[in-house]
Length: 111
Image 1 (cartoon, rainbow, N blue to C red):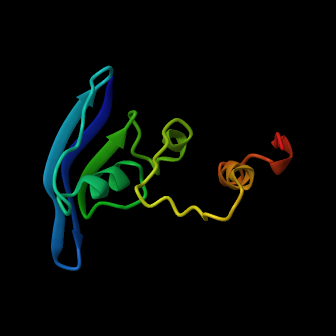
Image 2: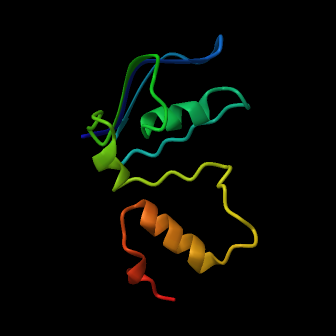
């Protein structure tokens, strides 16, 4: 099974082309890294692959799914460079918040 399948993927932002007809396949068990300078499209590719952004053209499949990514989100985590965490918030509160985003009840809490 291929873990990642990207076919002719294109994504633009107000005239800037972040991804231009990108195709890529990563098989199960392979190790892969995205390397490049700022603005090369690495983050855009990950966001399209995880369903955070929609492509302008082409197709991206992660774990065999390209149907809204809901099932995939239960199996894959994505932590962008900008995490959006609050420095003065307690770690336990942050964990409860993220658990609730995933549909868990706050009563599971270990605090």
